Image 1: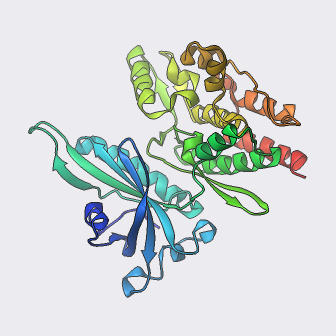
Image 2 (image 1 turned 45 degrees about the vertical axis):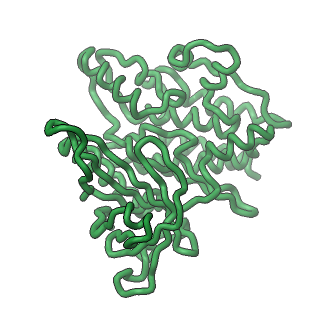
Image 3 (image 1 turned 90 degrees about the horizontal axis):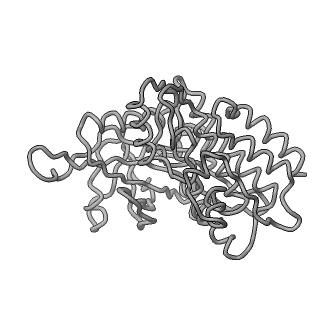
Length: 347
């Protein structure tokens, strides 16, 4: 299935009781706003399938509908872009490519490359405001960040088994990106970009989301200027507590690859266990510079559950959080290792 959206009525009309939203000949009704942040809003939408135009519903178009809610509800993200047409074409083109690659995995259902131009900002030399849309499975239990924050306040912890099962699902999502041709990096793996659904008698269902920063992963840096450009881009798109050392202090001659995501993945595993990035935790204990803590790979282990997490889990985190990117594992190696840990600790 392609990811282009067509016939999309403005969300402003829908929110004011006007026309419904149409996506690829599928009709949706806005239920309520779920959240907002930066230049994006997320809405709960419900598919309307009582007419011919719906073609049996969006769920019929995917090989694995297991993540779709039974009542036909989805989360729809609306993003704004204050960019010129050329830059926007590149950004939305990247997003469309990623969505096409991931649509059958149910990580991301649809996006638009036919973005809408809105009111022009400023004078004749200013850019237009554009809109782009994403449709996701809905997970009303919130993000991993929401869950770990609540658990941390209650001094509660995920079990070792649930930690590994949540992490394994994130690895599966990331593996799809890293094995594309060319490989793509997510560039913002963190608890706030992981949706959770709790299931009775089963591990939580975890979904990696928000591919707005995804880009081809491999980049050759040949000059100080290119290094500074990469650092500037990373400061805007990669959350600081989960940002790899080479994106904080990029050498003038180096190769960047998808192992920037592996660093973020290691930080996220730590956060599943203890509720924060290891470097957020270290600074909370002793203060100092986040950048320096990241570059030095300083990890402090909090007091965990009783009994504590197995040392093998700590070693697994440390394996991913090696400041030298060239000795960091790749996603396939991580999956092999996490499967061994699941076999050992999930019985």
